[in-house]
Image 1 (tube, protein in one colour):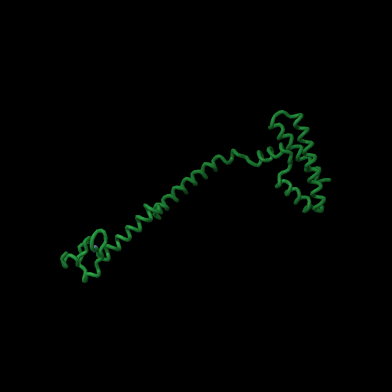
Image 2 (cartoon, rainbow, N blue to C red):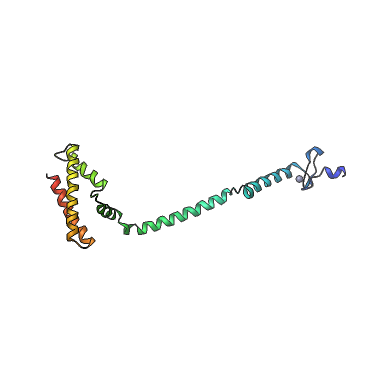
Length: 171
Ligand SMILES: [Zn+2]
């Protein structure tokens, strides 16, 4: 090994001012710049190929794709939303289980009773709402025996319900 060779980096060939600035690695004697590049490449290799850490640009691409997918799903949901009519189905289903007022309906009635022109005590208001529930139970039993279709049932029920509400408020 001659001295001349050892003052040049084996990778980029650049001459260094003294021998201490070259370091022996697998590829030979390398200058500090080449060793820095090697270390950087090695870190990249560890991150991407061993640890499987994705590049930020890849992540951004993935996020953009996910967002696009989500937006297309949201778009589809918006289109079918009008056909769902959830509250009505919800009440019908609940009704068949024997709970005849939804939580929201109860709250609405309760507020009406305690805040009206002749406000009731909270105890009295709850009593009236419970009475109403009992009357609705009777109404539904009655309709089940008389009415054949779901549509007819719903119509008759709404009428009966409105009548009961009117009676309850004027009690
Ligand atoms: Zn070099």
